[in-house]
Image (tube, rainbow, N blue to C red; front, side):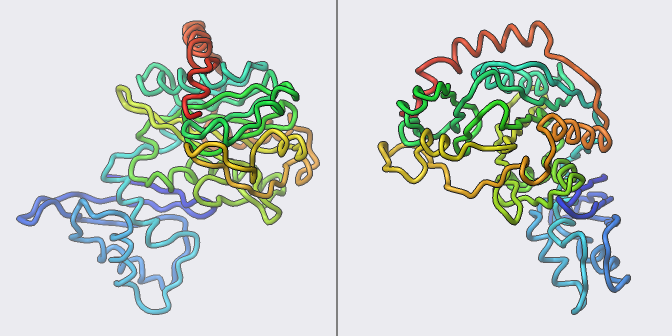
Length: 355
């Protein structure tokens, strides 16, 4: 069995192993750890292998890490990886996890769409990936109008000042993923979705999958001179503040799939945002989760690049890492998305399902 785990902002950890039946249950055998990380002393790599040998095959990654830590000599230096990263690579091997490069990725980047249609496209395209009818897809959004996108479990009244939203011509929609409210202005926002097979994140905890799926964009930002990192659970941040927030939804199907979408602040009208979002204002409902008040540092200030150039560099970075073919939404997918937008995402029942 073979498993790989690219540490977000770090190095690649590779594990090869076998599973052997024993009177006590299945155990790990023939474990070999490799990668482009740094480790001192050299002999510590053998200590890592020996620590994993004979471990129960159902041992979680944190417990595998504890076995490794206990076996390493005092003063061992691990650079670009950690004992838990090795544990994650083991779990991915056991789960037959796939790698980014195992797939033919497709890019969808078309003209502006209404907010409700964007919500529907996420659901439809990810369901198609789950059913095995669509390849893994990177979709870059273009917004047709301003919007507030609230999380699946948020209280509409707690998050949005309805009168202010109407005054500013802002549409309020609810997405299928959890998390907090996002304030959208078409020229000031960069949004993308990844619709990926569940196998890509097998062996990762829910929390680890966030950073794993956005490691490529951290590299793209770094190439633009933006020193960004992942702030658990679901933020991309710099020293000056948050620049993006992510959310996920798991869908069932033939193989299962994960929807991972990210909204980045290219620029921001902070006064308008605070007028529309009820951040820090009196709570009107005892239902739903609240959005956190966080300092935002837009990409326009940090890069000096036009929004279109930032997107081009992000797409080029993804293509350089994993390959990326130009694609489009099929007529059948669009028809389903338009119906779903009308019957679900544009409906008052869905938007106010948590009042």
